[in-house]
Length: 330
Length: 253
Image (cartoon, rainbow over the protein chains, first blue to last red):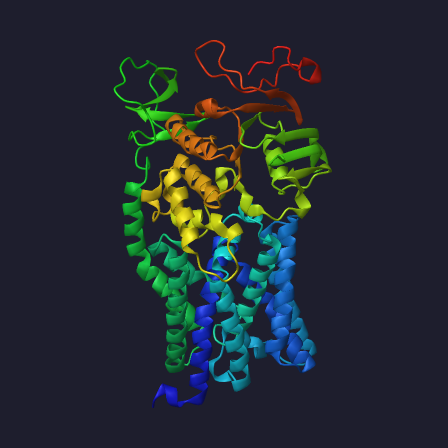
């Protein structure tokens, strides 16, 4: 039996394809901004959205998008105000989202188990209508993530510098949050709300082991996400398991497989980096140096240690600090 | 000629505590000005408020004669924040970081023009990091990272360059390389305002020093050089009695 002859599998694979492209694209920016868990927080909030849809008889996809966007804006607001630390804000939303979802589903007279296909994905439930929504939202997210890459990169890399470049930092932050919320909803049918964040973060984490540029990391994360996503849906068909779990295990497998390669690359780079290998805490000896054949500096080979307002150089087990035309022992 | 940067009656409070009080300062076109002062004197607060990163509680900031809220010509301003901001969650190459300095001159959804690329290359050349362009920015030494941030500001070809503590934690050798880069910037006619705890190797470049203490300007004028011939002693002494009355009465720099 050919997998692609099954209509529901065609839809599931298409949904997986666009999800695999969109989730790592947004996720790379979130990781760069040190908001790796934002997708998780939004995913939990979206559970409430799904339950709201079930309760009111609306399409769960629609209500999930609306509630996820509102949740993302709330997180961004709390983060920007700086009153509550980001992780506490996220924690509050985690709990509120899940509790709200289970509560609303109960009021709707359904068992919490009916949420399962939204929590972990389900390849048989992607309807033709879902697919159109998923694909168009994902295309918009990917186009924004790539088209606004210079601006997004600057805002995520150094917010204050971006502001002095005249960028509307708040607008881009809100846009990124909304993109994350939309991605979560897009991924709901394939990876599921509880595991969507993994597809955002793991490909970025894998790619950054191998590359040292942002652009190449972003693009290869999208490639890895697509592979994991398509592979996971296919595997889940044969194993009859939830696609979310297989997608995430494949992505994790990729991370583990590239680990030795990444470690080797990092080791080589460390050797090239200045002053990383010697012991910077060598004990200084009390005597002062008489002769000094060279000037200490960035490339002299001696480990540099910041010491108060100046820099010491570790030299034969003691620390030299420049003082006029000679070096003092510190 | 309007001053590239002017503060008028500016005051800044952080968390209700006044950090800058009634500050009047105008930086003249083409000058290299050092803003000195001990920790907590308000020098970083001053430049951050001047860049619009902190709100003023009173007074106003003017950039090239335009009040800050109406200022839009950000391509004329290059800002070099303190170095802590250089690292982020995903690696980026030196070239990528420097390229983000072109943003004020770029339109949305347009690729880099050849003009942009030339400016990025020139900025990398001027800080002598052209050969490190494809290296990860986070892997460079402290002095090199500082120069990456300066190149990022220079890539926008600014008329006013503002540097917050460019020499902090940078060894003397790197300070001299930094001084060379700033020398080239100043020679091109740009105005430079830099915050420093100590001038170190940057001393010879400076046209004018402004010393802050406790949120007020306590010295403004020619940089004074060493008095004992042994070391450059160019930081303010916070333990000394301060206030407007001692201005010009032997304030040691």
